[in-house]
Image 1 (tube, rainbow, N blue to C red):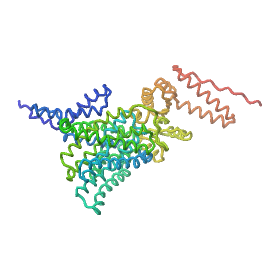
Image 2 (image 1 turned 90 degrees about the horizontal axis):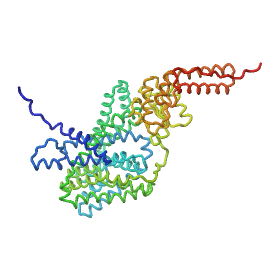
Image 3 (image 1 turned 180 degrees about the vertical axis):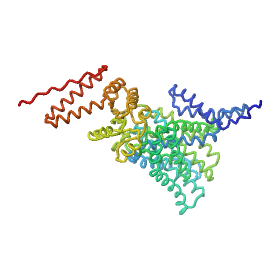
Image 4 (image 1 turned 135 degrees about the horizontal axis):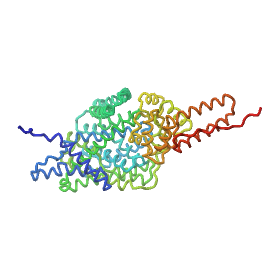
Length: 590
């Protein structure tokens, strides 16, 4: 019997390594209450070419499970792509408009002022003017991929300082393409004048293509997929949109992350936003972790030891120059000194786009291979310090105020009522919420109903509300109340059960098929269960009594009394609800 041939392990090394890190190292760091980001970075150092890889070569062990930087870099890049797509979903055009002062004001000043300061520092160390310009621009940028997850993990992303940090990072993502153009100009790769147009034309066409295709095709695509009621197809559509937008942007000369961000921003305005967030989240977390592993794998400890002055000097020099400048700039835009210091500390380290710019500068002959390698190590070291810096920068302090301006629905989740089911009953409930100025969002499993409601400007999302994770995405943890109007009893039961398990203090009002179903809902934890038969009979009685001349006040009082008696009978969990006591009014004297 012939044995199987040689098995090629190479294609499986990266997923096996990463799954091992995600399954062992990260849970260990969580148990130790240390940031998982730091765990991924350290794990990347250990399993990378400069950790066990170097030991493997020195001892000729021929260990198969060693990660090479190139083997995971391409896949790891999608971690940032999914992160930016998710940020686009969370942001929405309304919130982007709210943060415009921070994005285009603080963001542009931060890049300009820090870039000039770092340029001056590079010139002071004897570097040429073109090299200093490129390095100043590259080192002025910060790390979106590490800073945003760290802030989100520590629940600081929705604070004033967190929003300012995110706004600056967003502007930095937008400015990457012009910086790459300047790098090519200094390298002699492009001519001035007409070439400026031809350099930016693909980028502009790419953005227009993503926005145009998104406006025209995204909603019909997801409506078609949602009608199929297949979780697998919906997830495939999500991946197609994310990767397609990223590749289109990269092909046009923009960053992949920017293309994904635009796609997320467009989807944020549709009824599929919450369901897309839920489908994308596992991919974002895993691929972003892989990105951190790749960053750690690129860090060579021996290079740091061999050139400590240069590498450590670059790492701490970046932070020392940028932090006070960003702190001072942030003060100009309103935050107090404490919040401004947090902004400066978190944006002080370098970012992943520095790798892209330095690599382009090396190709253009502006930066030597040796200097470029040292700069990349210094940037990596500064990025690895971000989780540690966050411990200091995000310590609890006095309550932070939100930016001035009208708060969109995403910024005020605590005032919301969640309406599950937006048929005829749900629409009436929503209309009454609007009459009384109560903030609310709605969920419906029918894509057609959700699309029609969105067309009328109502905050309706498509999705499966019987899933606990989907309810969490809709803000269940901060909701004011939950109103369940679905007509399927089993679905109503599932939503009430999930919501009550999530929160003991939540007000839950549910639609019941009949008295027996209402009693079952009370047992599941509903605050109020309203049987359809009871309400129909009460409304018929009210209309009849008013029409035959009984005074309105007496009718309303009797209706309320009957409703209270019926509710008490249901809550009492008796086998059969006792007959409601008739309202005895005074007879009119003839």
